[in-house]
Image 1: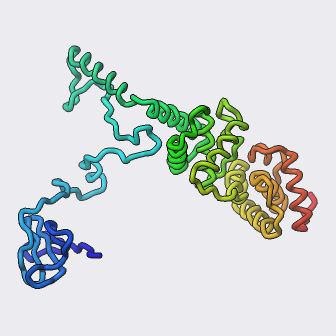
Image 2: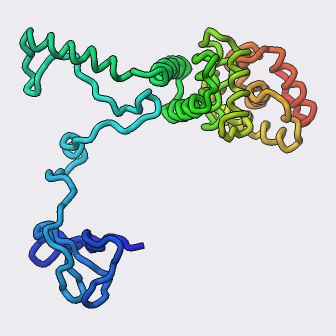
Image 3: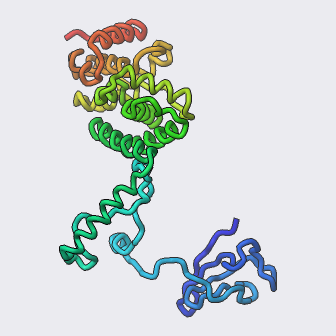
Length: 326
């Protein structure tokens, strides 16, 4: 494939070696058969660098008409809008009329003009959400923002959850079901896909439907929507739990080694990853003399103390770990 190359002529003109703009299908000079071309933005010409034949003239420079020498200056002079985002019901393509009631020069509008602009704004808001699909997506994206802000999800997870929810809407899975439950299930699926350690209980806690309904919708998404969900790794939970308990990196690394050794022995199958991570952190805290109680670890991992105790006994027995006495 032909690659463009920018050169500068002896006269200081900026030239770019690339195929002629007028003939994109043929990349050969009609005179000599050469494949190297120079585009002069000052003259608006495309010439063959081999024989000098002018292939095209009066070409249009589609680049910006302004120059920028710093990144801040480039950002100020750029006139592009915000990028498309699946987290907005119309992907961010709609126009928004500002509420400040000022003109382009920053002056306040006259009272009669403000009333007219208010009427424009009212109809603009009405036309943004004009179908049942738009209303559904608008409500779902507001739920996505609410849940994501409460559990602290990154932008990548929000966008992945929005994409999964849109796929569910296209397949008609939302009809007859709670929008909140389907969106919560999509958020949990996105967390699993992006390997962000969040449990189903954490997400369902901020919904009115409850864990059972969210789990049912999640299983529905797995069956009907083309989403590849990786198996949850207990190692992904160690950093979050260790950070909540203010443990050192050495202790967290030791807990990760314990989990990896348990996976090699095949004793992690069918176990809750958050419970395994909590038990591994408890063992590592005892070994590294950064002792935390089972209650503290269970609260940080959002599991029960019984789960931590049972997984702890299994790890101690199967791995043959001996904890020093106090």
